[in-house]
Every structure is written in structure tokens, then in C-alpha cells.
Amino acid sequence: EVQLVESGGVLVQPGRSMKLSCAASGFTFSSFPMAWVRQAPTKGLEWVATISTSGGSTYYRDSVKGRFTISRDNAKSTLYLQMDSLRSEDTATYYCTTWAHWGQGVMVTVSS
Amino acid sequence: DVVLTQTPPTLSATIGQSVSISCRSSQSLLHSNGNTYLNWLLQRPGQPPQLLIYLVSRLESGVPNRFSGSGSGTDFTLKISGVEAEDLGVYYCVQSTHAPYTFGAGTKLELK
Image (cartoon, rainbow over all chains, first blue to last red):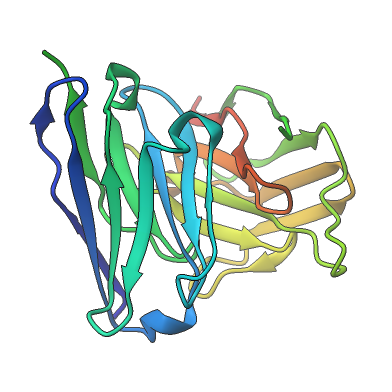
């Protein structure tokens, strides 16, 4: 059974950093591009970042470019999202996904 | 950025009724490799999104065949042939042909 389990969400002050993890199992992690998608409270879905199978190529939405870093460790079947200089507008549930499979999501709240 | 316009925003249906959701793109979603990266997702209340249809019309494994997708270029449709209670939630179209990947605003399917 495919599983994607996110962790690392918490309450953080504006300007601080946080790192999300997504542990994958039940499929060949290294064979799939991975993405982070977020959903602000009561809002729709928003793509954040994508990483290629090797990790050699990464893509970001403009609003997080230079602040967020997506990475992966294929040996550990784990996806990461390093989030720096957090803003209140980054408050959302963050999902890791292969597009075919989705984690349950982790809540990130940016507030003073 | 590619804008995906979903209509209607809300859909009221009775059990057994057939319904359609439209997703129109601000530019062609035909990739230079010949694929059209347009997917349909369902998000049930309190749940992560679930992939229903990928590459416009391909049914994801395990998804009932009452769901079907069609379209090309800039105009796409999701059809549910005989709504069931478990189909209630918010439907999203999403494109991954052009970065940044973008979602439609969603269509909420409710029981009449």
C-alpha cells in the first residue's frame, strides 16, 4: 500500500524557518517526481514546488522562490521542504504528492 | 500563469443524476511531447485530494468508471454518470503542462 506521511508542521513566528518531511513507502520512491501542494484554510489548492526523480531539477512558484527549498533523499525514501523567511500567507496545510498519491497533509501556521 | 476556469462553482445533484464540470484554460495544455497534462481531483470534506482522471481522459486505478474525462487544447470536461453519495465534495482540475502548475478554483458537488 502506498503511503505518504508528512511531519514537521507547527506554529512558527513570521520570519522564522521550518522543515517539513514526507516519508514514502509502498512504491519505488526514486522513480517518481514529487511535489508539495498547499491549501490555506477554507481555500483551494496551490502548487508549491516539484522535484525531479534524481533531485537534479527543482521548480517553484514565484511567491516561494528564494525562500523554500525542495529536496529528496532517495536512499531514505523521504521528501523535504525547507521553508525560510516564513510569512503569514504561508499558513496552510501542506501535502506531499506524486499526483496519483497524496499524504494526509501537515498544518503550518505562521503567526506572532 | 495558466488560468483554469471551472464552472459551475457549485453543483446540486440528486443520487443517480448525471452531471458535468467544465474546466477552461487560458492557453493550450498540449505539451510539446504530445501529452496534455490535465488531471481531475476530488477532495472530500476533511480529506486530502484524490486523483480521478489523468492525461485528460485516463481513469486512475480504483476509480469507478462512472467518472470520465474528455476534451483537448483549452476545453475540458469531467462527467459523472450517476452521482452516488460518496461523490460529494470539491472537484478540481489541475494542469502540469506549464510551470507554475495551476488549479481551478473548484466545483462543490452537493446533494439536492
